Length: 257
Image (cartoon, rainbow, N blue to C red):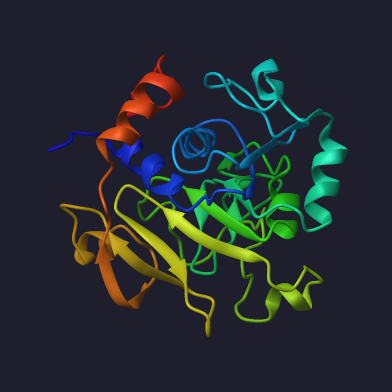
């Protein structure tokens, strides 16, 4: 039986949602590790894009930022942020990977502030970067994040990045491209998708050793449930070997446990 920590679990599970031949924009950290793992296992023809302009790189080891020179290694093009965002706007990017301090039941993300007063917040966060653009323009938004009631909230203190906003049809009313929006959320407890009718977050699979009660207890809103909630397939030995020895041998990401 394989042993793995929660970060390794989230990365391995997230990587499975990236198909061969797809395109994905990632930031640094766990999203980059998931994309690299997919590229080195089942999705060898997947193209990884970086906000700073690396197009379709073949990453040798884990970069430390989106502007790291490794994000241009054997790439099709070394461009810039404008070219990356234009590619997303043209509808050529299948997935983006994002995170945030808060996420609500419609997949809206907050990475701007905690509190009720924008000018005097309890906590000032880094802000959007390219997250708003990516979630607005890429076809599918995926999130890797730890799960607890402080992160999974009924209402975000600030919407930095649009999910389904207030529910079905809200993105289109706001002028965002039809057919785009939140797709999956991967935490240390479960995998979530979104209900087609309400656009609310729903539990799709629960990780080994966890229960539906565990998942709901760490969520600040009522979760919907898929018709058949499954048990998440654990990481394989091949995935763990590739992740530990080829993707993140220095344990920049997976060493956080």
